[in-house]
Image (cartoon, rainbow, N blue to C red; front, side, top):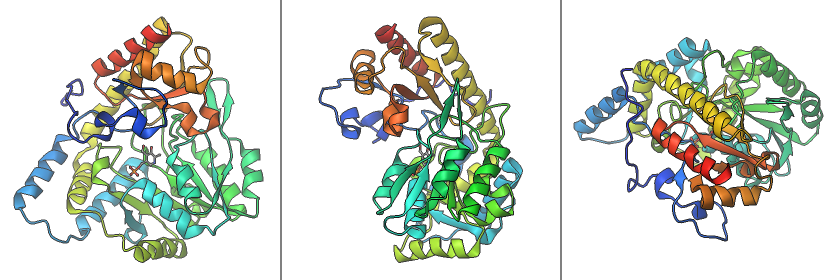
Length: 394
Ligand SMILES: Cc1ncc(COP(=O)(O)O)c(C=O)c1O
């Protein structure tokens, strides 16, 4: 391996949300947590690709940080990455930018929903979607994922029912799915796209994890499925999960349909949202141009972490059941056989195991009794976390 993912880097004291925060700041707790190893927020404990760091250092050396525009070569890098990696032909005029994926989803709700509209989500799902909906006067229409044995599936009949609700105007799709780790097949996406197009429900496809695909799986951008999907979608991608650049806050919003794009542009304009900052643009372009080798090794390391975790739990805590992780670096584990009460599970995780994970319950009640663990860390940290969990629960 050319890159060292085993290297442990102390992030404490760097204003890291993951390492310098306290569980009590993030969720309401009526007990004290002294110390808990953090594997909660989707943030990697690895240095980004060295090519990106070198480009940032070079840019910083220039010493002038004035107003910046998105260069032609940055647009080209985005377009080439999408084409080469995902077979998706993106036209330059389809591309807009946002200061984050959650802001992009939030602005989509503002752009495409009226007060009182219903927005479809598939719980258990990435929880900040919920606030993008209710903070904008809309309400959540849940199309829960179906747990079929050890696999999550889409309930198409229920989606048809929800999409035909006259107040349903938007569907926030999570593809690949956080937290359950599914990479939706082209045929699943086609069926969802057909249901939404027939019912006049616009699809916002959050594809933030699209580059984090485990071997043997294949991500299909929603808008590349067919013309109907292309014309009825807003695609959200970013280098932030791919290269661990979330703190730089740059997200790409791809909207092929001119009228749909104009409505999103109006929200950007109304709020005077600027283009991404110059360091974010430098990092984005470099990642998309030169980061593929690093990403390949990263994915291999994460797959090994996943395999390590499964073997470890199978041997030492067989009642904890990890799901297959087709994409993302987030493992979803069923703890219901060990502790079914979600509040007690959280308390035991924080105070007995002393590990801070994202509790399944925050992804919706369908996640009660589950835990989400971030596998994007050196194996020694993962092993420490698993040791703690096994000691507390075995
Ligand atoms: C599916 C998904 N969307 C959005 C985000 C957050 O993106 P941002 O930090 O760019 O708002 C995350 C972070 O974990 C995510 O998993």
